[in-house]
Each structure stands twice: as structure tokens, then as C-alpha cells.
Image (cartoon, rainbow over all chains, first blue to last red; front, side, top):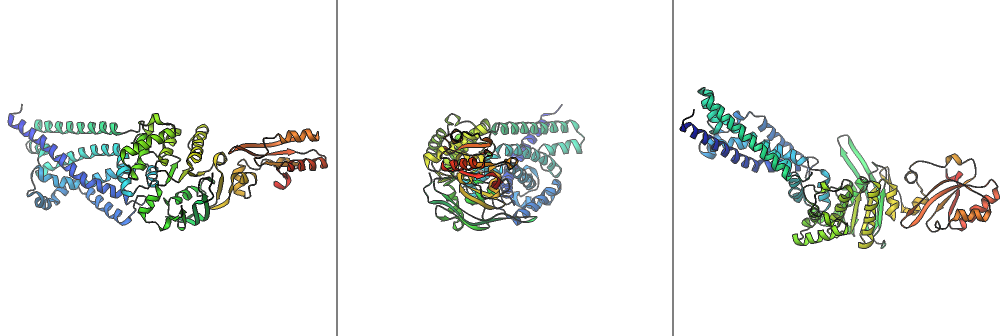
Length: 219
Length: 338
């Protein structure tokens, strides 16, 4: 059904998709995790309440999150060019992906950390733990299962975003699906790429669930 | 057990919470001394402010006015770093235990030691020692979710003891436990107080907890301290309305009998092992009717009260009351009491 060139192209697209997703997720977590922690810590019931910082961050995150991802991709093209030298291909796509995903991740992290029992935080404080120790030794470890689940959701969302960047020449499976399936009506190629995307999402989600279950000592 | 030197001194402490609805005053002008080595109870109805008060003792809540001296140090003058250090010598246990759910029992007990910067091998050895003390050596590698409430509180006590604290603050530590488990936990606290000489402050809304282990008690009512004193004194002669409510939670129990001559006998702990009433009946060859009796064991002595109906003959009644007074009991006519 497919000639070797097309199979090779799909294989390359598959790897590109994984590459974009994993690199962007890692970089987005590098930004989103500290942001999420700051959101929780500066909250009015947080370890170090700071109303203005909390609202400013909240507004920026909401603005970025409310921007349609394709529009964001186009808006940040100058920045993408500045950082990667091009606006096309998987590496260039990492820039808008990180910018689009970091606020989402910040909110995921925030909600995970807010699940941690206030009493446990208070107990740590009563033992003389500093805010940093509370974050590092209580908040993050106690929220670990929830953070892992959140990561599975975030990574699959980023994979979805990465497929969308096909419209602006982002590379990967989404790019193939759009070029062959949408512009050239080659439905079979599109179906294969979509099936591959579905499989990646399933695998990531399942792995995330299992890891979270393994990490959780509450049962 | 008390050495007579104050470990915690609360001076002019007030706490106001600022909420959206305005300012809410929770504690007003609290003065209190807690002595080294004693078991001190702070009792009050829910909402009286006792949980806030105990959090002011280690500055988890900053007092709005006034201050707390711990071991001679004014906590209000300390820097954040110094405060963290001081908190390491104050253990705290909670109603909901507040264990780290993702750490096993051993690692939970190690937690305060990690914060104090103790080396890992040393911390683990110490933690095992403490688990031995609270009788949970076999649960070292279990996770809190696998333990019962009483076991969780034992782990919390071991954790609170890790850094050799001078005091353990207990915030409703037995309120989530059944009566049998409560007894076990209170016995453990008492044992810790006796063996290690650690001061214990107990916040509770249950008079039975105070009776069981406290030597002195402060009654908080309506944001203020209503009464402070030895448990036996407050129990036998509650001076304030708040104290009476706690001592007689079911309300005034004797008012049906005020028409006939009744007297209330209060046992102060020294003479209740002697069968006084029976001896009196034998001596006077006149029966009395026991209308109400409530005696219990407090810290190794018996305390309580008995209300008896005296014979109609006024002279015998007077003589009986004199007889009881001679036995060192507090006796009063119930008419005056109600």
C-alpha cells in the first residue's frame, strides 16, 4: 500500500513528534514547575503570601492560556527565529510549544500541590521547617502521585499541540496528516498518522497512570 | 513533676484575625504560666480559641498583641531562623495526626531530624529507638495508611520526640480516637512526662482527658481565660460558670431535690478510700439517701461528689455534716449550691 519513501517519511514524522513532545515537555516543566510552586506559595493561604505577585502571575498565565495555540505559534515567530534561526521544522516548533505549555503545566502543578493536606504542612512548620524545606520535603513528595498524573496529561496535551503546528510547517506526524490528508486527500496516510498519534497518547497515559499508582503509598 | 520554674509564659496575648467580613477577635488578654515538667491542660468549648492559643505558643500564629516567652526567650524578638531553631525544641501532635502519607513510619520519625540536620544513619538509629519507646518497632517500614488511628498518633508522638523537645503541644490529640485508644495515648503521654520530664500542654474540649492526666488546667471561655488552677481544685470547687459547664456537662443535676434537706460532699482525694458514708451511717444508726454520685480517679487519687439526702431530724443532719467535715471533706447544703 505504501512505498518505502512514505514509510520512511512516517517513521521520521513519528520520531519528530516524539522529539518535539519530549523536549518541549521537559523545557515547559522547567518553567511551569517553578511557576506552579510560586502560585501555591504566594497564595493568600500559602507559605509566603504575596498578593501582587500571585495576581500578576495569574493574569499572565490566563492570558497565555486563553490564546488559541495556532495564533500563539504565529505571534511568536519572530522570537522563534531569534532563538532557532528558523520558524520551520521540529526544533523551531519547540519554542511556541514551550510557551504554550508552560502556563498549562503551571496550573496542573498548582492544583496538584494544593491537594496536599494543610495539616501536614503545619506539622512540618511546627518542627521548624523553613518554607524551602516545606516545598522540597513536604509539598513536592506528598503531591508526587498527582504530579505524575498531571505530567501524563500535560505531555499528551503537548503532543496534541505539536500535531497542530503542522499547519505552520512544524514537522512531525501532524504535519504529515495535514499535508497528505488535508491538502492532498490521501486519507490512508492521514489515518496511519492519526493512529500513531492515538497509540502514543494511549501509551503515555497508561505509563503515567501506572507510575502514579506505583508512587502512591496512600493505599 | 513540676519543677516550679515556668517554661512557657504567655503575657498579654491577643489574637485578631482579619477576614473579608472584618476583624474577628479570637483571644483577648491571655496571661498564663506553664511550668517545666507539668502536664498542663487548656480546655474550652469548640470555638473558644484554644487551638489558636496553642499555635501562638510556637508562633505558628503570630499574636496580634502580647508575646510568649519560651524557656526565657521572647519569641516575638526572634528572627525567622531563630524561630525555626526554637520550634525544634517544641514537639507538636495533632487531632488528624498529620503524618507524611508518602513516607514510611521510620522516615516520618526521621523527618524532624532531617530538618535539624542530623546525619541519616544517626537519624534512623534514633527513630528506631523512638519507635521502640512508643511500641511500634515492628511497623518501621509500614506506611501511615496501613496503620490504625492510635498507631498513627503513636508515630506522631515518636516524631514529636525526635529532637528531644522541652515541651510537647497536643492539639486535640485524642479527639479522633475511640475511648480505649484515647486511654492508651494518654497513658503514653503520661509515661513520657514521667520518664523524660518533658512538659506537656494538652488542648482539649473533653474534661475526661484533663482529669486523666493533667495536673493544672486553664479554662478558656469566650476568648479569655476564665479560670486557672489545679485540676482537683477546679473539679471540686468550680468558681466560674464556664468551669461548671465543663465539670457538669449534663447541667445542674440536683435541682429536683432542693425541697428536702440535701448536702453535697466533695471528695478531695485524701479520704475517699475510706468508706465515709457507710461509717457515718453505722455511727449515727440513721440512713441517708444517696441522690447523686459521681466519683472518679484522677492522677492516682479519687475525686468527686456525692449528694445525700439527710434525715428529717435537723440536729442529726447538722451532726452528720459536722462528722463529714471532721473527715476533711467539703460539705455544703445543696440549696446554696443550686
